[in-house]
Length: 220
Image (cartoon, rainbow, N blue to C red; front, side):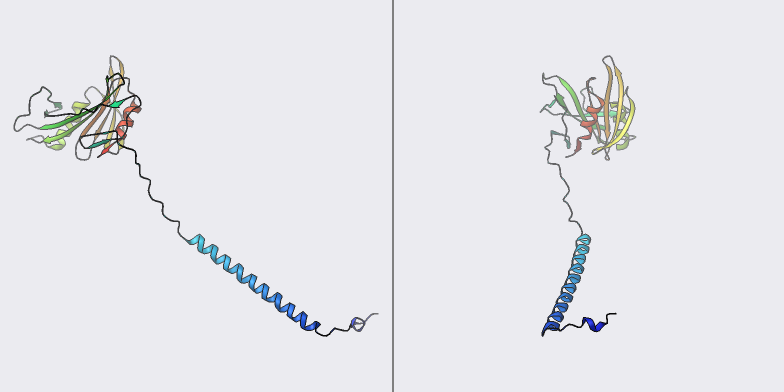
């Protein structure tokens, strides 16, 4: 049987010291590695916790097509252009009627300012109308809210409402009527201050086209 004494070998001078130095070096390397892992972990936590920088809101820089009575026209249907002329006049307003006989509203009568812009076709024919009706002067029995209601009723005579939606200018109602040329659509907007905006035109204009024009209207 072999005993432990059979493995006793002579140790060269300095060997024990070199082994000790090697052990100490490995211990230092392991300690540095542990510290490095801790620092990397803390860095990862800091990066994850750092708030993401805020992005600036995207602002549309698309130019306006035109303007009507203080409202910006932001959309022109393909194939149509905005006529440069602006029509504006003052009319008396009675129950559900805009008086359009060429006369000036007399004293004590409710009135409204009517401003119109027209989109024309390539051949110059009228196609789409944006009419802004703004209550101007109130009268006994006709406050601003009443005038707005009368203007809305006059603008949509013979039409039925088939939808309602919000637009930048206010609340819009999609209307539909019947003509000799077929179904006709209209979008009527009522603003917060009682202004009425009528977006309508020829029978071939689709509800989607009129809705796009109405959605493109906003306060200038």
